Length: 114
Image (tube, rainbow, N blue to C red):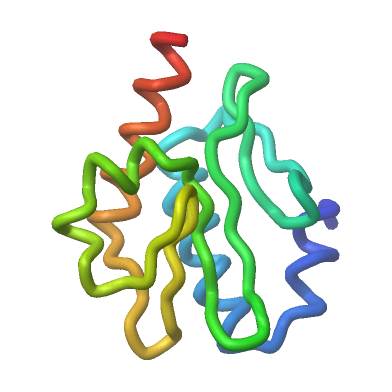
């Protein structure tokens, strides 16, 4: 088991399943991304740079893709609570897979051109 598996097994099953869905999408898109605990939560690094993080908090789940994807996709993210670098969502209203893929693609482009 990885440190991420150990972290996720402490989260309630419904929230864990949603975080595992996000994890799976990112791993499919970026199979060579490194899974890490960054800023106290599970996430990914790619080419040594922060890709994104995700977590279950008391009243919501969050995706932490940095501010650039949020700014670029603000219109598509209008159904979610946003703050600088954070997308908050609920189990009954998850971030759609295609939108997660767009977020990851934006992060990959930013890392590749940095």
